[in-house]
Amino acid sequence: QVQPVESGGGLVQPGGSLRLSCATSRSTFSTYNMGWFRQAPGKEREFVAQITWSGSRIDYADSVKGRFTISRDNAENAVYLQMNSLKPEDTAVYYCAARGWGTRPYDYAYWGQGTQVTVSS
Image 1 (cartoon, rainbow, N blue to C red):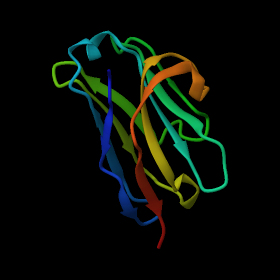
Image 2: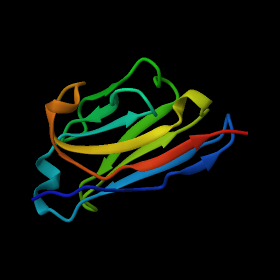
Image 3: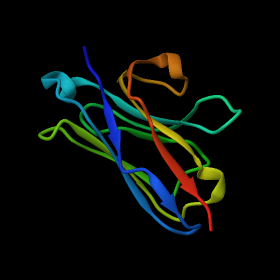
Image 4: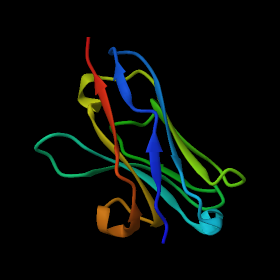
């Protein structure tokens, strides 16, 4: 069983930055594509970014392009989401997803518990 664990969320002012991390102890992590999704109150879970197991392909939602960067370190079994120029509309619970590919939640098999990101002055 793969259980991603997110960390790095918090409260940040508009225009600020945060770096989310997602770790898993499973040794097969390096063979999994990984994704980040988010869910704001009263809204459906939405795609943010994804990266292939090798890092050769990366996709972003239009709403975060140019501001967010997804990366991974297979030696550490970890994937990261660097978030810059944060906006209040980025406020959501951010989820790490493993083993899949696509922009819909059901495209991924394993999910973390989420980490809260709040962008507010």
